[in-house]
Figure 1 (cartoon, each protein chain N blue to C red):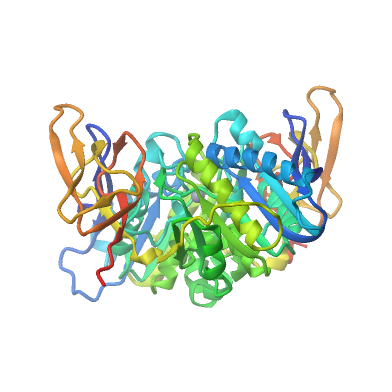
Figure 2 (figure 1 turned 180 degrees about the vertical axis):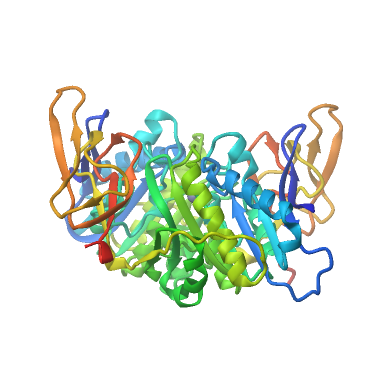
Length: 312
Length: 312
Ligand SMILES: [Zn+2]
């Protein structure tokens, strides 16, 4: 393992701020893994710590294929963790909305530019990302449809689902999008949680990356076959909202659960009276893919995303 | 007539409402031109609050002079304004990345979608901002080069000092004005002053601009005082001055001063050692139309923007 500085800058009160990367193996730029960019991405950072340990072990055992180099950058944003913020400490800008960056711009733009420079040229790019909505997911690989994405490669992670999505306005300023545009096969891996640690899904994420690296001939590792991924278009997900009211969100189902049309999947409870003000029903047969993870909810916001069961 | 554009029950006891004041002649022909004035998108920018008040007050005072429709949306991010939060509270997202919005998302996206739906059909939309807490701005219209030709004649009526035409590569894809321009509503951003404050001279200058614009659109027969003719800044005309060190910025000039290349803009000093870190000088001659307001600086912080062009 080789520690290398990815970017360094001076700050007014925090001393020198250096983003570190860790290299395993040497040779061709085979795979690059990037962890948390926001200060609430604890699970993403945790996954990186597990992966770092594992890659170190593999390297010591000589299980990284010779001539292949892996770069792991656990976090681009230590400061936001340290002060309990989601976005950049001084100006609230979002590093994952700053790509491809500008080396003479503001701090997050400089970080993005420096990172872009370091991570360009890798064959495969993996980022542990978080969703803009706070919630729980079925673990999946997400690919932005740039026209350059490879769904069949995404299957090699062996996670239950591969989700493809048309780029939204803000996607164009993300690492994943710009990585793809610069010729790296880029994947975003979504674990179950973001703001809290979940051992099981963290281990699943680590296994999926090790499986992918093995299948791409970058490491030698004995891994389970994993799932045969179902490929889904994000458009196919069904959004379920609370159209009647806000209040306490009492969930009755969780991501991964199968539901039947007409099942009550949540109650919205009036915080004053304790009465149910709304019942949320499953609109069709299928599987819960995402659910909001907040104790209370606003009216008209999405509570669940579900996968329709395909009747053949 | 006060109308509610979007509403959603919040978590407990309150309802979020975005409202507008629909001002129209008593006996409309149905062929009236329509101007939409939007403000309060960023909850820390309050100049627009006064501007909307003053525009509505003056129209109501001489209501018979109004020959078209003026829709005023003073607070499209009402919770941000109340909470002194630039972003959409709870979700912590910049609302100006969420347009055109979605009725299948968070409450911010839901609100954004309903606002866009309501504004569509307007001939012109002016989105009033007042910078950030970091920078003080001269009254300026910002438009993108791909729509500049169509919008410039209207922008020139806004009574600002500067019209800044951005290259289309820097277009903010999720912004309100970008979405509206895509949907055929000629839209522009007006910036002035600094967040959390109202600069009444600047604000009144923009109020006059809105009445001049209304006169030009043929929807106002009353008084309008066009006192400023804007200088047009293309991409090449604007130099960004970024700090290369950290500490406290002590300006050596005043906002909107004319400087010569090499003149000292200010010093960045180290508060612990008591010594200077950097002397920031003007990279070109011109007018300092943006100047750092918030004194704490990190490497990369924007300190000033200089408009060369006709000021050189
Ligand atoms: Zn603004």
